[in-house]
Image 1 (cartoon, each protein chain N blue to C red):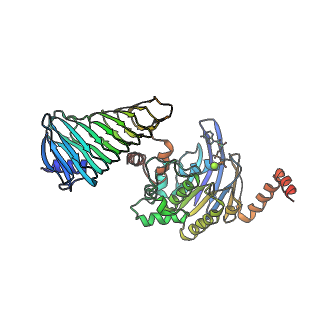
Image 2: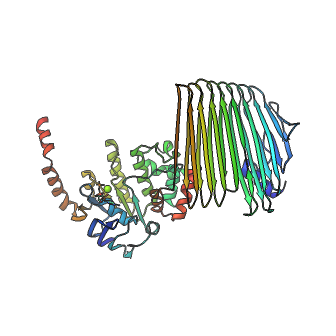
Image 3: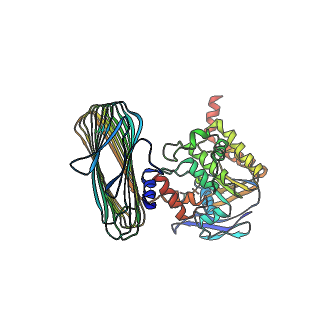
Length: 305
Length: 242
Ligand SMILES: Nc1ncnc2c1ncn2[C@@H]1O[C@H](COP(=O)(O)OP(=O)(O)OP(=O)(O)O)[C@@H](O)[C@H]1O
Ligand SMILES: [Mg+2]
């Protein structure tokens, strides 16, 4: 692994060395390292690119790292990763994709991740997207995440994409059985002429299940973002989505939330706010001695922290 | 020394809010009081650079700051605790204290500023300065930021508003301590007798004009008298209670 690949790995998975526990590292479309443990088995798919990850019931306090890095220009990488998480687990999965591209052609990673989360299991899923390189070489990422939560299962998904990616089309779909809970925290920053589209569809099918989708985003310069969420309450359940965006320069954000209640006891809420940084926030920080530019930076960093 | 020379401020090109305000503030502790809408906060904003005067001049230690930016004034040593503190989604209390201090400070240092304003530091240092903080908590954090800056001129806009009765005395101590420990001047906008009581000098602003300016002993008795006289309804009530 070279220096650039190491930097990418550090950015997306916070790894300086090989991780502890189970891992699968994919570099330029091929496997670059894999490790299974007593409780977590990683096997390559036979019919298509990707892996299957099996986590034994009752596995607690273990983690899986599955970073993907691309440094080859002109590469389009498509993977299917399926996660089978047994009952009563408590695990963390750290995914992430870093593309370094300055070869002039488009590099792209499309990851299709499907999760089957067993009864009463708890999963924390962290996904970070990072891009570097020059301005002409495009970097594209289209992640699809499909989650099936069994009774009492609990998933917290944190996704971050801070600049560097020219085009992204994110899709997140979920269905929940009774008592299950899904929390999604998404952070997106776009600059230049970047485009980011994010789509959520969550079916709340079981009694007492709940979903909370929180998206915070900043669109700078001439970038463009589209937030589209659909929460369907098909049982007595609670759904909440929140899209909070700051636009700067000529940034553009569309938020189109949709709530559907199919059950009299479905309680669904959506909040959306789009606007520039409040003048009084800038002023307050300027009275602390920051320049307007520094104040903006602090406000944006804090907002996406 | 802060000097205002014939300062006027017209908002949106038509509403005259301050008229020909001249003041020389040389004392360490000066209180500004006066009726609601009189122009006190406007004056504070002119000093901090949030508004620019439409006429007149403002000097800080002889330096003309009339048209200086908010940032440059802050760097020169002006601090301003807002009447209505600003909330920030995502920024934590520790971030604001660090930005106020203008350098990397330890958690212990940041906590000390919070403790001074009566906040149990451990509970607050990691809190987001968002809508979840109560009004009184926010006011205290606003004061802590000015303490962390420790500049030569600190302007507080109704710092006592929203601070509970039990903490009021502690707040007075904060200002007394600040008075003793720093060498700067403190300018407090307040409606509270107990704060006016510790001021060296008192300014009264009414209808955009300075109507009184003098030592506490000159101004306070008059003020209290006129306040009592104007309080007919209250009189009736006291009679009833008797
Ligand atoms: N930007 C503005 N545009 C128009 N009118 C304004 C503006 N700012 C302040 N005013 C008006 O100027 C007057 C003085 O306001 P200011 O906030 O300075 O009063 P204050 O003395 O601080 O009052 P309080 O004791 O209620 O805080 C008020 O009548 C207010 O409505
Ligand atoms: Mg005021």
